[in-house]
Length: 225
Length: 406
Image (cartoon, rainbow over all chains, first blue to last red):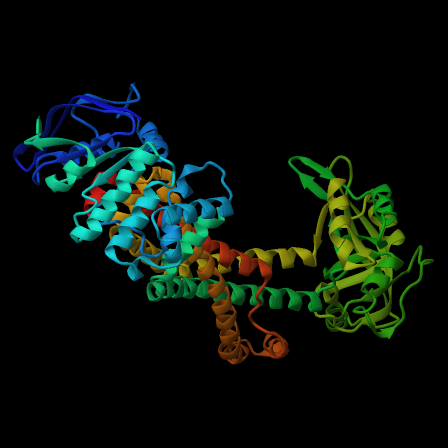
């Protein structure tokens, strides 16, 4: 899936101050491309990810998925876009503590409403866990898994609805460098083998460079690197 | 749908103590309502049973029907029609007249048919003398005195069994002029005291009475049915032809209405404790929304709609309501047994007499299936309604703000 932003601008008020998080960002991400966005804290990179992920609306500018403009005023269509096309991976994993690994992977399928039977969904969740190398951990609760394992479960969960676009917000931020590298390798594999378009936000420039295209953001503007 | 609830129960089992406390809160409220309602129901049933033993439920009193300006008289043909209805054993007509003796003692005279005695025979027992038979035409007219009338006549007029006396019946002619008719009565029997209106009446054969008073219709009809179960339908038919009907069912209906009203009021006030339970649900669910703000944001990022989020929280409320309802019912049964154990000796003392004695063997509380179903439904509806606001709040969370909470 191609993702294109045109003049993406986001301003919000914080107290009396007017903060410009994004200032006219134009980006084009090709189908199956792995793009890393790097920048210091507060540079607007997370805001960019949230807007592309249909969790936040831009003040100005447009986002196009495969050439079709995202209508940020239509809440329902945002839900459907998130449900059908987007998978999220977070820095803090965000697994649901009450559910075990395989149930966490299955969780987004509760919302897809595609009439898959319970056993079909369970089978899919197990397949995805196998894909991230955790088939033996299916029955474990999040509290029983290591950081790397948690992020692998989270990636498997992001794949549950077979999204075309994966948005990863500092996926290695809470992991040691070795574990972080294995997570990055996993994401890279998804882009090369499964043709997933991946946009990752990170502040680790070195590892970002190994993944593919890198875009820098500083004070809400694109920086050529 | 099943998964929605299995997910909800998973969430709830992580907070067992909290869920236990809410369920207990709701259950106590439900139990209070059930206990009070079962007491109201128990007393209602006892009162109705009492009426049934002291009243004849197979007897219907029929009077002329008055509706707006039209009066429907009990004509002979109507009486026959009623008598020929299914399940009607007798339809005993009577007329009532006021006579006055030469010494100006007023007499309430009731002209009755033999069927009347068949209906009231068990209470109209002769103290002395005999009943008149059907051939009692002309003068002197044989009469039977009620207990009190007999005493009065003996005292004032010095009349007793076997005596004859003259009495006047005043009629009004077509021009409104009074027309007195004189007749001679012969006292043939005196009744034992019945304790009701019969003590003040004089009984005479109906054909003779109607020959004197020139009435074209009966003043009343006593209808006897073969089984109390058919009293209502027969009564409805009587009312259907324009007449007025009274029966012990009226008293029972009155008691039922009163007790249902009393029970509703008591139930309503005991239901105030349910408000506490509801507030607990609201409070706990709001806390839960705060605690799970991140989870809500995550779910939205993963494709959950507002309605999906709302359903997740409401499903938890449904589970709380179901468990609260079941425990409330169980606790309510226990509460009702307790009321019976503790309250009954007190009530028997307070009531004394017949009502108290009849309570000895019975229970003052009654749990009906509908009380339990109502208790369960109240718990369910209460939990879900209490969960609406927190669930809506959860559903409306901005996914981005919610995610930042993690």
